[in-house]
Length: 126
Image (cartoon, one colour):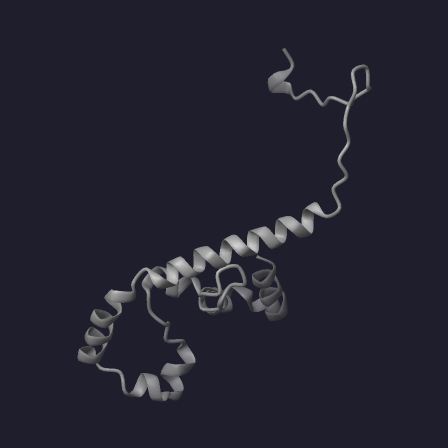
């Protein structure tokens, strides 16, 4: 969300016109937690970005319908690999974040008759 907000702040007043491009950028950028793009995790393929269509890169210029079908059929054998690696990376990322957060936690043991502040919420008042 911070990256999305930063990109829209850079655009300024014309943010509504560029929102689809910013969203496409966000969906095709690899995330730190998974190491994959959200697009590749959903569709199991690399996205063709709009600039590749305009400039006609090698990958886009040589793509054919038959070649795409062959690529998709050959990738069925390794269909679970990106998800598995993303899950492993996400678990490691969560452990790192938890370790970083928990290093400032101080343990306290409470004894009988210690004063403790109890916050009462309206739904648990009774």
